Image (cartoon, rainbow, N blue to C red):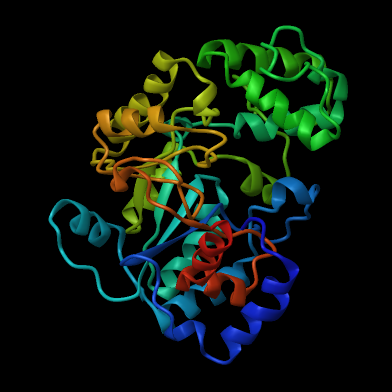
Length: 358
């Protein structure tokens, strides 16, 4: 969750939440969408708060679901689809629960919470989960490799980011993100080859990517944190009543891909997932999902690929587009408080944000 002032987060939102004001506030539009990126596996010890900030504790996730079930109408993803394609009316104060990236912990640690609370989630996964040995998200692996060997960022093989020198970033996270942006300009094969070279050059003792005859040397809890779902686990997630959506083939910064590569990333993910699952994949979520990483071209490509709708990872989109392909979501992170979540789902935060922009 982004850019919430301390006054709103720690004073105003708790006061409005605990006095019941937020529970009487209607969401902006006819529904709200809440987005997660997974939960912390049992016995996992966080190494880096920066990357782990996208995850929440299972107990916190359960409290969020219980709050939403008590004060809102949590809807099934297929009911959301029916509202889009058939015009079926959603219940008042409708909320859809989604989750991006398709990490293993969504199956091992998140699914049991969803099942015990009777909530269906729309999971957005990459086409890497169509494989038996999917490895991990390339940009998260890059983060670990650069942490172990910072000189890896000084790679002349990558395009220089427009408007910045190749080594001008002021801190590690900014340098890593600049490198992600530069690597996103490579096509899928070139980026995979580049990452293979980095693994070889890094000389790190721990492997985050399985080789042809080896497994990643990760502890079980770390594997659940970092590895992506395999095809077997993905099928079990779908068979458990969850809905699967597409999140591109490799999760690049789409706005930095060539037109052909962006089209392939979006279209191929739908085709590959439908072939692997034997069922329709009707929803798409833009990687990173904010105005800095996508634009109107990506909206058009998602529509042309045959998706029924597509989701952002922000609550507002200041650009023209088909509403079905710019569906806003509340991004929930590690430090999201329950009153803060309530303020976002109720629509109050967005109303304040828009009022402040006037």
